[in-house]
Each structure stands twice: as C-alpha cells, then as structure tokens.
Image (cartoon, rainbow, N blue to C red; front, top):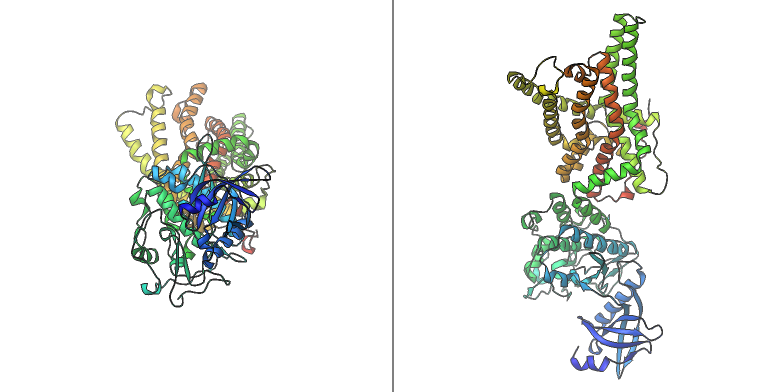
Length: 636
C-alpha cells in the first residue's frame, strides 16, 4: 500500500461504524489500523485490503476465507473477529475485517531479541497455541500457515504470555477433520511441477502463494476451493503435503507446530535455504536431530518434537492436543512430579490408605498371627512343633504377600489417581472388589516373579561381597547391640547401594503394575509395555523408584536399632525379621505399620510416572481409561 493510500484512509469512517485512528501494521494483502467502534467506543483492529488488490479474486477470496474461519471460532487463544464487510473510501471499494485490539508482540518479534526460549516458556506458548489449533480442527478448520508471525503474545502477569493465534487467511475449511486417515505415500514430483523462485528464505518469510503447473500428483483436496492447484503456506513451516499440493488434515498443522517448537528450542529452523532446497528438504531430508542443536534438552522433549516432523503424516502425533500433551509431559521435571505426588497423597490420604491396606493389611495380619503364635507357644497352649509349623507358614505367607500384593496395590492406586485427576471435584469411582484384586494378581504373576528374581540377583550381587568385606575388616561384631559397632551404618550403606542398583537396572519395569491394572495387559506383554512406555523418560523412572523405596531404606536401620535398644536384643537378632522369634515378629509389625502409612506416597509417584509416560505418547488425561473387561479376564 502506498503512502498516499494510508493518508487517504486514515481519518475515514469505514461503513459508518469504525473511525480509523492510525496505522499499526502492514501485511501482504493490505494494512491493519487501530480504530474505534463508533457505537461503543471500543478500540478494535481493522484489517483492510488495499484498493488495488480488490480486483484480485484470489486475495478477496482469501480475505473472505479468513472471515469465515475465524468467525466460527470462539476460543481464548484465537483472535476474536467481530465483523466483516465492504465499504467505500472516496472512490475506492474496500474489504475490511474487524478484530479485537491486541497489545503485545508476535512470537517472531520476541525471537528477534532472543535466539531461543527457555524450555518452560516454550512449552507454555506451544500448549496455548496447540489449544487454539485443536479448537479450529474440531470445527473442521485447518490453519495451514502456522508460524511465529501468526502467534501473538500478550504480556501476562507475573510472567509469561497469553497466546492468540492469528491469520486464518489460508485456512482450509471443510465439513470435518479426519486426522486418523493415513496420508498418501509421499512421492516428490519434479521441481518443474512447482513454480519456485530462487531466492533466500529467512525465518520471517511471508506466506507463499504459488500456482502450480499441471495436475498435482497427490489426491485432490477435499471439497471445491480456490486453493485447488495452488501452493499456500510459508516455506519454512509448510508440511510435505503442502509442498506436494496434496490433501491436508490436522497433522499438517502438527508438522508446522513441530517446526515452530524446533525453532523455539534450537534457535534455528530445521530447514533453511533457497526455495528449491527447502522443497527437497521438507519432502525427503531428515531434520537434524534436535539433541545436536540443543544438547541440554531432555531426550524425551527432543523425541516428541522430532515425531511431529515425520514426513509420513501417519507417524506424527494425531492431533495438536496430543502433541501439546506429549511435549508438556516430556518437559515436566522429576522434582515437579515428586511435589505433585506429595501434595496429591496428602489431599487424598484416606482413599489411598484403603488401597495400601490391600497389600499391608494381610501382611500386618500375618505379623500379628506370628506374635500370637509365639505367645501361645511360650504359654504352653501350643506345642513347640505346631508353633514352629505355624510360624514357618506365616513367614512364607508373609513373603508371598510382600512379593505379590504390593504390586497389585500399586496398580490399583494408579486407577484411583487417574479417577481423581479426571474428576477432581467428584468422589473417586474405582472398583476395589475382590474380583478386581484377583484379576490384577493373576495378570501380574509373571512380571512380578521376573522382577523379584532380578531384585534377588542384585541383592545377592551386592550383599555377598559387601558382607565379606565388612567381616574381613572387622566392622561386624556378632551379638553386640551397641550402635558403635557400625551395624546401622553398614546396613544403611547396604540399603542405599541396593536401592541405587535396583532403581537403575529395573527402572524400565517401574510402571508394569499400572499397565496391568489400567490397560488389562498381563504377563510378558506388561513388561514389554512398561519398557516401551518408560523409554523416553528413563531418568525420571529412576528418580520415582528412588522416591518410592527411599523412605523404607532410610527408616529400616534406625527403626531396628531403636527397637533393639528398647528390647535389649542384639541388633542382628532384631534385623533378621524372617526368623521365627517374638522379637522379629514385633519388629516386623512396627516396620509394616510404617510402610502402610508411607506407601501411598510412593504408589502415587509411580502412578504419576505412568500417567506421564501415557501423556508422552500423546494421550490426554481424559482419554486414558481402564480397558473394559475381556472374556479372558473373567475369573474362573
């Protein structure tokens, strides 16, 4: 728009409703003005097509398209369009679009001052952007021109930004979106099929509108539209489907979101250069790994971003919402997960305690039975032989409960956590019936046995040489209850070493109880599923396992020492809780009372870890639900 055009329009009243105050921006199709609505006095942004472009059918149709698209959208992260029409200014006929007046800057302008954004800020901006894009997709609108220039940032106290997605001028409108439909295989046509100019493309390149020669090799876009055989988008952010002029769906926007995410986190777009090289790179070249350009990023975050840049649309996250969910979950630090676990447990402790009783109720009952058994033997009410048989049976049953019921309670805790997270204001609806406990028990037998065997191997591998070294060094004195002997410190060191080794080796198996209870997947399949789920966040899995077992490992030596001092028994006699003695049975009861109370914190941590892994897969919280019972799951 020439300077004279600006001067001629400024001060005019558009359609007798809007008084233009000043020019605030220029675009490819015209200009944006700050204006006042004469009826209400409200400030608005007025987008006007330049008079000379009014004769261009493509430009006018694109303008109408933007009005139709944004007119359907009512979302806090989409710019609100309130009016569209045609007016005259002097002898010229103008098309105008009225939007809410926004104060702030575009994401592109922010990137001019900072090469890359901190991970939390980038994720926050992308989550809000994805929420807007998802709403458009829900209404059957594909944006097709997502880029930093079209993401507006309003300052939000105390920090951060409120996002508004702009410019639906090249949006694809159709009756519905079918992101699950597989895209046609990508076969790059010859470059002569597309008119491309050999010029440099920088990150702030404008929307490309290029007519194609000949027929597109891909399937025609659904529904008649002006964009038939026209390449629309911004080269740096266009999906392979757009470059090939094929039908696009929600996953085309996901690709553009992936490019934006890559640029925010790496400081540069994955592909840059001439139009011709961009064309081939977007279609055939794999993007440089994000971990190479931003090695400080968590591997899970890089994996999610790279998944959005897949050439095959079927391999990308199926929706903008799935992409945002996966990205936020991958970026969540272990410390935040621990904080949430503590807060959640405190807030819902009574319900979680009931789940904890599934495992520790029978264990405490058996410990009480052992105490009663020893008292009856001491009183002569039971013979020594019968007492020993009952004691051995109780010890065996206790071991079975610890091995098999604790994972079951962990799995059922995940279902409770999921129910509360999905309906925080309502009572949790979780079946804790005997049949459900038995189903989880049966399905988890094989993975529990294998995990227990792995734990025993680790314990033996650490304990045997450690015991040998401490005895040779004279650190262990049999029959001495005095803590100066170093027994407590030795036990504590041994517990920490075992915990560190087990958490590192078995971290991939951390969520198998949750898989069994929530996905009704048992046997080796549950272990394989756990390994696949935890692959993107193994370090977080290690942290959550440490958090689960650490209280027990820290408390056990000091608890047993205190009990030994009070009961005036040797520390080793008390520590050997598997021996059939009254002292061992009483110590065991106190120890598992502590576990009953502290276990919910660890169970919630592992449950939140499972939900995190599902979200990294792209499953929003409200989409995660226990699978319906299958015929093979019925007890019998």
